[in-house]
Length: 455
Image 1: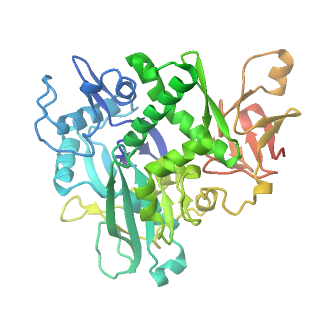
Image 2: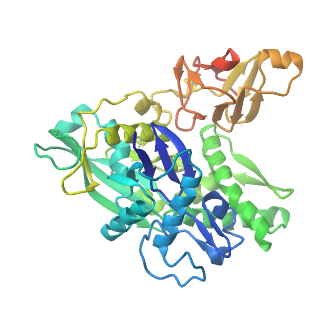
Image 3: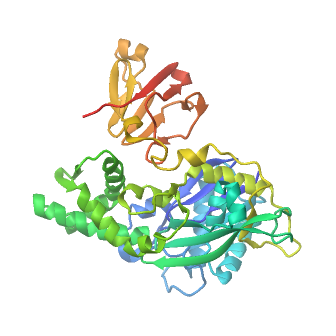
């Protein structure tokens, strides 16, 4: 099975056989020692002048004039980042067949450079696929083929958001490296919104939270590099918690940093996020069918979006990419950037689409708020670890399940939802649970019931 590389600089992901093997942010710190990925991210506010985060969005060979023998340009940083990713994998890139899922905004010259870099890493590139196309193909409904109703996919990157419009069309010619079909999902429009990416929002939230700490505690987190980095690292989780709590009509969130604590008004955070993404939201108002990439979907409750918006999941993307790559065939013209795919010849799973629509088809009074275990209710949006009955009786501190603000994780083995294997961790912000659902953890011989607690 080919290796799948999703080139989103928020986190370059590597999949195989539908499983996520590695995720590494597209960030580098170039000093005497080179740092990449998460380590570079955690140093980015301490060493801002040495931090580079545009080598994937601006993949080129323009000189950077850096005082490091291994780094001449962004192409070198991309190559070194791939080597960093390879070192974290249980396999080698050498002679490995690879399919890249790319943002449609990547220029043609960057595609050529990417193929050269992949070859230098020892990879055998067999396909380049538009990321928005790969993420939405399996969601196409049969009646859309006749209506030729456009779909809109939007995903967030470090420095921009990419809006991709896709239209089901009838076509009898062989237009790409996939086997011939009469019905294609084809990219028909692409728009890039600069300065609407995660890093811009993150930087503005850094200022916002700094002011809150100064106002409420007189502590300035930006006074020192260490505390500024700590604040920078904490913001993504705080924002995610605000998105989760927004659904529960909770009005505030307590945020702690370096022994200081502030109360955050969730309504103000929602307004802040909506103001930042106003250009994006304006572009999406007229979308007849909108799909949110999983990076942006975490902020979905804080945004103003059309009611038919579907939040995509990492697991479904991994499955779709595996299915697409298994059906790739060699093209006499060499590796091409695939911008159209058949939408009726592959066997697809229908189980993910309804579940990934946030709160879709589940009335509020049926949405679960707690998990019942051992005669105790645990809030799904809180923090808890659950011991088995035997461990509880023995006073052991070992646990078999953990809950962290909407994410449920089995400590060992798989997690089953109503008898079927489900995501790990199970994120109820993209897959809401209803009262009466049963979670099972086979290794612990445990069955837990989802309930709703009012008030």
